[in-house]
Length: 475
Ligand SMILES: [Zn+2]
Image (tube, rainbow, N blue to C red; front, side, top):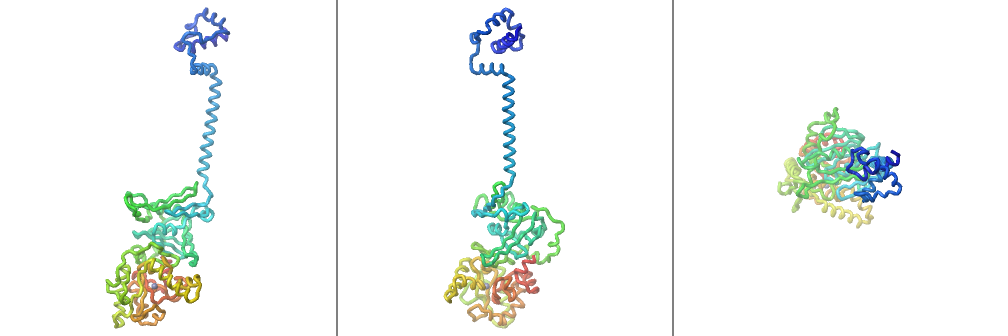
């Protein structure tokens, strides 16, 4: 059989007689038939054969069969190309995704957005965030100094950072920070704020503790190193707008074996700090403002508990502080043999009240010829801007001698002051702005302003002749 014949026979056997699959050529065509077909080959029109399928599909199949090796080669090449392109794309995509962005960070705290400069937020490939800013947003209590910052939750749990340390204290347990804490005390003149920079990874873990069982974490924290977007927002209960309570737990961290700070700490002070931190050692000053929305819990009327106050006036104070103050002022009267020789002339002041009060002081000075800026600066030596006043905490009072009308440094010459200086701490009160501590408290000496901190803390402050800021810097 000639080559041509062979091919032709193959064509016939497979294309024109599709059901003859598996049979040999000889079974399909006789030699005579092949001869006839071979002779007519050149001009043979196959479409004239019976059962010839002339559809496009059949044509394509026939073509594909005829050109099998070429089709396979082309297909393989195309497939290989697609595979190479796909692999390359995936590789490039992954490369792009994993490559950290060096754009400035966009920090979203609830409704507010901030831009953080890439170079200042990133140190040694670690992203640092200001936890004080986050604590303000999440309405946690912030206290601290140039050496230490403490963030406390409503349930009494807390975290404490020390300047330059690579560990932190979470509820008394020493844990790894994954970086070094940096505390920055900003100029008090410029809206005095404190900052404490902590690695992002620590912050994410800190807020991962579930206070309400079965609920998600109470603060959502996320960060994408591709877009450099940081998202932090408080989560509310499913059915209400009330935010879930926040709490911290050392369980979220790797503990550091030698907890020197914990062992060295005075146990009694430590207990006080842990259990009553919120109500007793809350630090409020120009660097630690309470802000517009802070209202203390448990305010009661001083008149209701029989505390001596300026005639015709009514004052509010936190309950524990109010009861201790009443005891103190009654004991003072008993000691001096006079009925209530010292009385309260100011106690809790709301944000709005403080705002109006500060404005009044400024206006008085402007009336005396000072410029607005001079007047504000001068007024802030003895009075606080709204949100920065300790009076907003409901934990402090101003005292005057009965019969006096105005607050005066001459109060220090009274026998009341002499007795208070030696005994106030026994009732949990301290002289908040003592002489010689003006550079720390940032207030002039105020012999009339007493602050409740609890008996244990007051004793330490009294014995060591320190102010509240110095006390808090220790613990
Ligand atoms: Zn005061």
